[in-house]
Image (cartoon, rainbow, N blue to C red; front, side, top):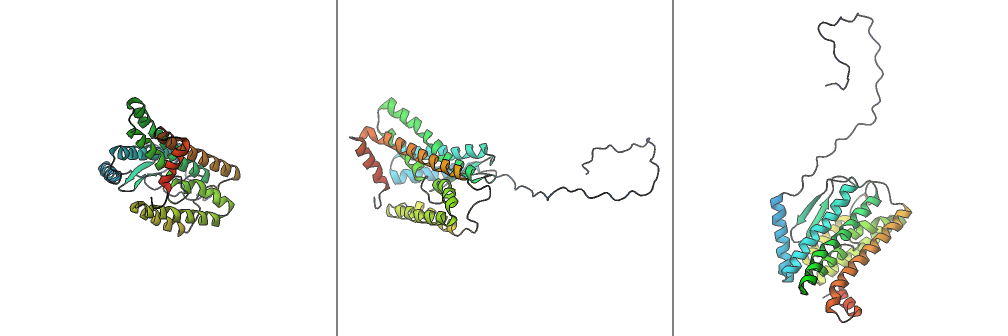
Length: 285
C-alpha cells in the first residue's frame, strides 16, 4: 500500500509518452524510525479483581476483627488508587488501571511513563490527597447515628493514606520526595530512602505485619539494586522541588487532621488524641 494521494490512470486515459528514464529521486528523510508502542494493558480480570478484593477484605477483617475497618480499608484503598488513576489520565499516562493485590493492597498502573519527574510527583501525591475523600461517608454515618464505630473507618482511611506518604519504596512518599532528594544529590536519595525503608520494614516486623514487611523488603531490595536510579523524563527543577515538598507537607497535614478528627470525639483533649494516634506508629505495639 502506498501513502501517495495521486489517482492511478484509467484504461481510457492516454498513455504517457516514453521519455528518458528519470533520475533517481533523492531519498526522503523521514527522521528516526518510530518504535511501535506496546499494546495497552487491559487491566485486571474482573473475576480475579473480585477474588482479590474478597481475600484482602477477609484478611483485614481477620486481623482487625472489625467489619467496619475491613469495609473502610477496602473502600479507602479503591478511592486512593482512583486518585492515582485520575492524575495519570490527566497527565497523558493513561488509560490507567487499578490492580488489587491479595493480602497486601492495590496499585494503579499507567500505560506510559510520566513526561517529567514533576508529573511523577503529582501522580504520587494524588492518591493520598484524593483518598481522604473516602472518609466522608463514614463521617456522615457518625453524624447521622452518633455511633463511634464509624469513626474507626475514618481513622483507618487517614492511617492508610498517611502510611503511604512514608518515603519508603514502593510507597507514594518515595516517589514524591525521592526526586527532591535526587535534585540535591542522587546518592542522597538512595541513602535516605534506603534507611527509611529499613525503619518501616522493622516497624512492620515488630508489630506483626508480616505480609506488609515482606512486601516492603522485596520492594526495597529491588529499588536499591535498580541500575538506572532516576526514571526517564525531564528532571525536577528547583521551583518544582519546592512545590513538591510543599504539597507533600500539605497532604501529610491533611491526613493527620482527618485522623485527629476521628480521635477527638473519644479523647479528653487534643493532646490525648495526638498521643493516641502516635501510639499506632510505635514499635512493638
